[in-house]
Length: 374
Ligand SMILES: *Cc1c(COP(=O)(O)O)cnc(C)c1O
Image (cartoon, rainbow, N blue to C red; front, side, top):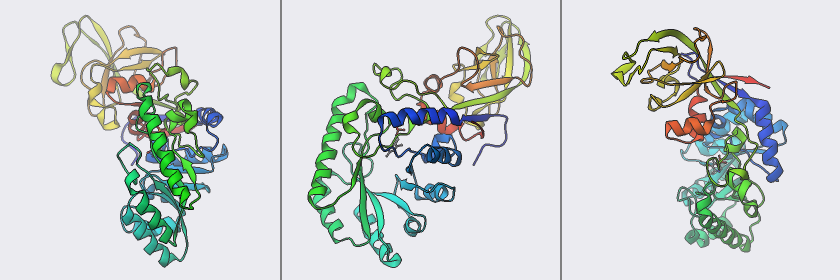
């Protein structure tokens, strides 16, 4: 549900999304962009129509429910569900809405066969393999059993075999990535030797940029599409260049006033003015998913300049130091993410102050009301 009760707006620039997707396409011959969690907070409707226009033939969502929501948009391509069916009522939806699920448990194959018999129609699935992420999928020790299960199956057809990399964004974990790649190849070869034919899909954003040898048949880019480099701040920074954040988050100044030297501000008096100051109260707080953990250590952009947060972030308001930007008045725009001028707040920077990663920044701030430009 969109946060409707404050002035915070997430602005999505579809031209930038397109620019990022073109960069991905240069390295990924068959991308299946990941649009789970409402396209990482960018809005699954507008993002999926843009990607379809740019040539994406398939998209990946999380739950089956998200797949249904995507099928109800004009998107006509393949829809992959990365979580796969969980509740009994999700099984028939796969046929009804033509969703290709990740399948990584024997019980799922059994239930799919049962449902397939009812539908009397074959369903394409994406077999999920666990090659080291330890999350979902069949492990290397399960292959014998999976092969015989699939040989006996009449209503499921393996269209794709997938696995997910745990450390592709970490240059220090190259060995583990290559090990996962080898395990994946071995498991796929094993299935192929049993007579199955399918597409192989392993790479996420980081692997697309840094491991061309793991491109296989199709790829699942996420974070680079939205404009954050998985290698930001590492020695591989240069391996994913040119991506630009498609999201900016803007709100408004509610009030402006002076704070005399020694006066406290906001709940708990966690900040005392070290000198005479001018502060702006801005309409953003933890109820807008602007975390209370940002208290006293984030910055915003006002009038093209940086202004640091002072005191605690409240439910719908925060205070910033505008001593050096005295022309600010109520109603002015304040950027929590992005911003005009030479020093926009980057997703990586905001994530750093927040103690998280750009993925979470996008997912959470993207729950505010969105505006699109293109
Ligand atoms: C989220 C997700 C991706 C995309 O990862 P990025 O790091 O955003 O590129 C790919 N595959 C799976 C299974 C995922 O869950």
